[in-house]
Length: 375
Image: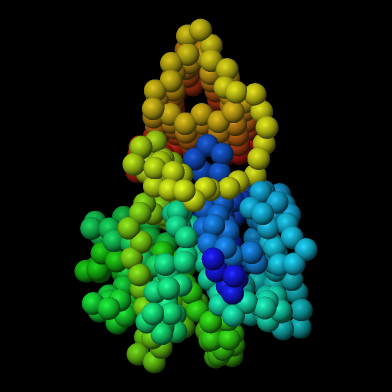
């Protein structure tokens, strides 16, 4: 158990490739898998590793994120000592409240970092979803006497889809030491992709952040890691399980569709390390006499009277008679009335689709119906 380690999650990423999905929420608050938010996976990874002190740095559109996290009770982080700390931006003489990068964000919350009694920090983003415990990474870090240790996974296909977001490709030696990095490269020959999680001593992080911001450098990868590859001992360890990324709308759609696969479900939810989330009690799903459901995830509180195939349906959703859904993501409180046809569609929260509508998207370019919209 990592008792001498605290967690720091940067939930301030702005990814305009996600379009309407992040107009009213942060990337960390994106709903996934029928009942979860993106940040649930990182928080659960840390808690399952024995970390009991976690700070969440927010930037914009963080109201829904704060509502979801609350006091941290669901993650056993509502404590007298340590616990969950939500760190919103604030305006001071040294901090404008508008972060220019993750280094600037950490410097803006340096008071919290300096107060933490733990000696090690796991620094993470919120757009990469996977299930692990960090004990192996910690042992790997100590064994190699590393300055910074990171996780990566391998993906053979490295084609450029036009919508990269923080795509870090790394090259390592046989012992795992990082010898080169490429950021958002369209011609990379490496299949090793960084997972946006780093382990280092707290005092080293403080020094690197202060040094970078003093020189007008605000990005962790380009301004801290890349220039210091030769000077610092940076090591990378492979994560062999499933990894999902919120790069763009297509990747968000793919992530949810992947959760319909049994092997992905086993890797994310049945490893012995549970994924915790905010609990909302509701009645079980109610199926009508003519309802047909095939290979789909349905959350509680739904009423299904039509056909649902290969789709992820969140809480309190209504699907009317004669309506057919395929490869769709339907978020909380959305309603699809009678005789509609939806394929490759993302319905945001409380969106309504009137009788007889036909919405057809593509897997690479799903149709998005914005929150509270009526079609």
